[in-house]
Length: 65
Image (cartoon, rainbow, N blue to C red; front, top):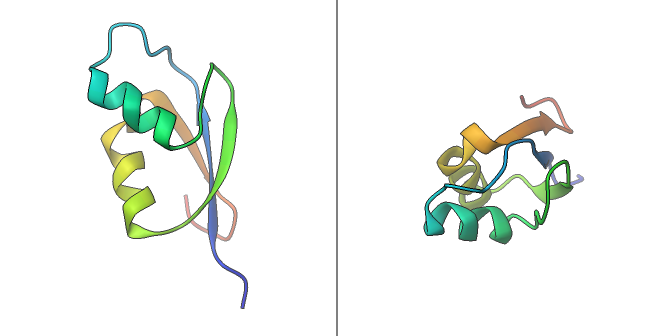
């Protein structure tokens, strides 16, 4: 069975955010505004998304929102 994935897009600027939040966004593979990344849906990735959710838009590829 195929791995579940989640697509994340950076929709807010990193200016004025904490250094740890900038590092988390970078760890998700996002560089600039409106850049997107498709990642495996693991607990580690979910935690990173929850930490910086105010900067991201998330789309579930396999039925998660």
